[in-house]
Length: 307
Image (cartoon, rainbow, N blue to C red; front, top):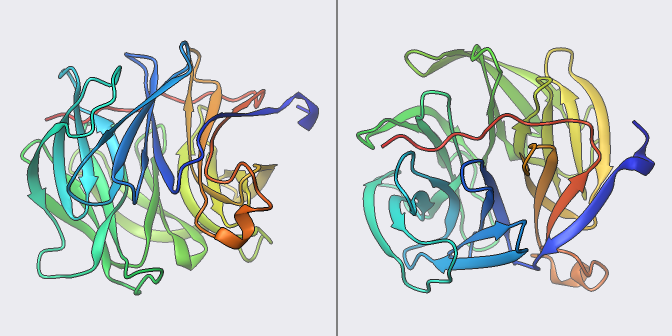
């Protein structure tokens, strides 16, 4: 497929730090967050309307619908896992929420970052150290949550917990710790949810990719799509061969995450940030939400959290 057939559209924003896109197949809506603004958003492609709610608790790393519960969401807010009640058809500046559990107990200056749900409906979410504009190394962890919300520590000494994905046969778990410039693969036991045998499958520096790896998703062909923060692009890689398949420039240098959505799940939604003020003057679309058409790829349904 030629690049001329690919179309990138700005559909919302700008936001300061949009992240965590999640396509809701049931309601045909895209959810995402504006992380430091503590807001969760819903984008309806039919009406092109964007609504928001504010979680008055802490920075929001992700928002994912709860399975079988209308207008109920699970979010990572600060170091709290919270349940939010919100009708995404409307703005709500103070929705009802309750804290389900807290992670990183005994630590200070950490927060939730990225989160995804596996095929069993278990939530996986990671944390990171965050003090002002610095990110202290090895302060974060990766957690797995069952229906009882108890956090199980899957990995520790993580600096910026980011992209998560699973192979279609549920034998491999993919993960990103952004400052390593690497994408990791682990053996995955779908019954227990345990991971083992960590290995690097792609290195940004070795492949000349600008920026650092951020959010990630997987397409139906089993290839990974990765947002390149500070690199202004998304890339497609083959996780089995480590082949760099495609590089697609995005009109926002701080590209943060990706998710397939739309009626046929053939649109790649891309979130971005506008945190570097001096460069934003040259990037009028920094921080915007984009959709990429014409990739010739589709994604699988994104899972809701079983609670």
